[in-house]
Length: 402
Image (cartoon, rainbow, N blue to C red):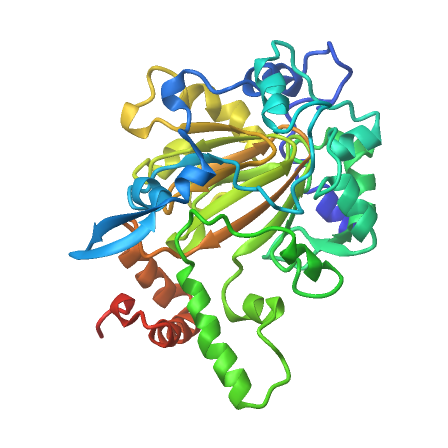
């Protein structure tokens, strides 16, 4: 099974040797020179917002009532707009240090990367440099490897394939990993559910700018029932993971890995914070025809590296309809991308990346009624417990009338 999994993308070759010596020109090495830079023109770039400003509280009208919410919620959640948030990792143990001597902010590292006219990707010939990208502490791949090298992580929620970080480190530096068109990435939604990785949940926190996750209300009912049954189980992370659909993932993947074009499930919002490496994003308005961006029903998802090769020039050309123009993001360590509900999006790792992501259910925005319908249709058992949880949390106003 493992050998089959490691070869899953061999059907999509676009170069006889995806990774060749610097100076040689396969598609990937040529593409790097363009997609590593800040997206241009500026009208396609996602807006940016400092987290301390995004988290400020304001009064607003919501369904005829005065409500307190964050500036971010008012400007981006309700309007369903993507944004890049800066500074949300302050105080996180998970955030590596990329400071240089005499500097106190990550900005110098970002400026050096963005202003460089020459591509400066990591040399895979030096594993220590690849695994840390110049960072120390936190969740660099090197640090995670040292702490959890013998622990297995999942590649997907849809199958049971797992691999230890030690074996994965060998894969991404092997000839096969270095030549895969779209290398395997770790997408583990159950990290932190058990020892010894449960400590990871204490090393980051949900940024304060986001509205409360309504799906968390289901745990109020589950905890009460657990207490009534005289269960010795407390309200731990594993309970939360079992109470609701998957909602948090640790993401690890080398260059050319990523996530193909998709829409997040159940009309949830999402946030993604990079701790190591660089990601390139494209996000499309919800009314974009799926087939025009490679989301064709009945066909497999196109790997993000292949999608960039085949679609990027088209969707960024002057002939592409303005109403479907994508929002582009170059995401660096310490930056958080907000993905609004219903937006098709794609992510490409430009370097070995480590990131954390959460999906969450918000009462704000234009898709709440569709979320209710989708949850009831696709997750009926969860929907029943969730509605009970909303009542337990005093939010009967959010439950649809029968």
